[in-house]
Length: 218
Image (tube, rainbow, N blue to C red; front, top):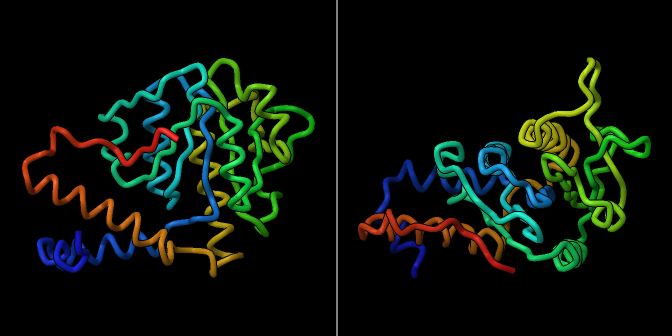
């Protein structure tokens, strides 16, 4: 598929919008969802990822299966690169090879505030199951633990809310402190843009009902 050829099938405004979004993506920020159970929560997290500029999402399915509520996600999954993993180990190795530091979101005394994490390296935040939290073996495989400071009586937040706050907070810091890492570039830019254009080709061919999100069973 030739990018220029497909672009001619779209309006100039649509092409400009997609290119602008690519320029705002945050390749230094990703999340790992550790067996999140509720499709509503999972879908809301994906929607927040797109809204705050996160392109890649990692889903661990060692216990719970990846399921979406498309009324909640509002199609966000079609704009994201979703990696599906049977176990955490390979996911961790994949992120390590790309220079990410991994932080589990917990409520332990060891956890530090999300706004205290250094932005000197790419960051991956792990969010746990609604009931169990992040599994102990996954916490042990991370570089540290983080938490969202709270000042009321409640001691926890819904996973989708916690993810949104984390992405908004850390994403804003990256844009302010590390503007040079904002935006997809090179091969990453071409791969994602091509996948978006391919979706438009399928829609134009009347295959909308057969669309699948850009996911990999890694």
